[in-house]
Length: 121
Image (cartoon, rainbow, N blue to C red; front, side):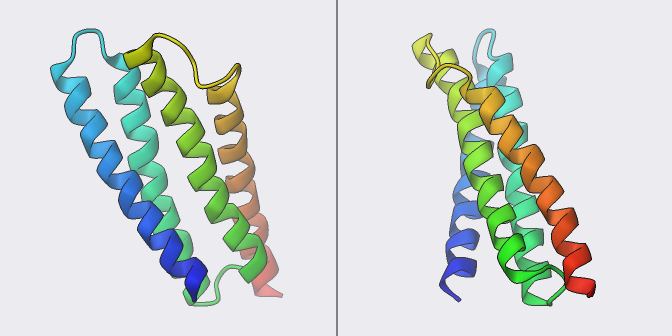
């Protein structure tokens, strides 16, 4: 399925960006924002892979699970992108980008829960 392959590729990109931000955080002066962005990307890249595996096994409802997995991508990109831009450029992606990304990720986690319940029926 194209969506599963796309999610796999996006998870790989998020993981690579997370490792790069971890290295930048370790070697940069006052780069605590990058450590938070790195952790968010690495954690949610793993969540995307898990959601993809659960979808493939039928343990998540297809439509809801896919929306949740793409929500992880969008939310983590907003959150990490905002923190990274603040660190390197001194301004935000757009007002309230990190909180918006966090809210999208929270909604995605709730959707995964709903999707798991829906798949049991």
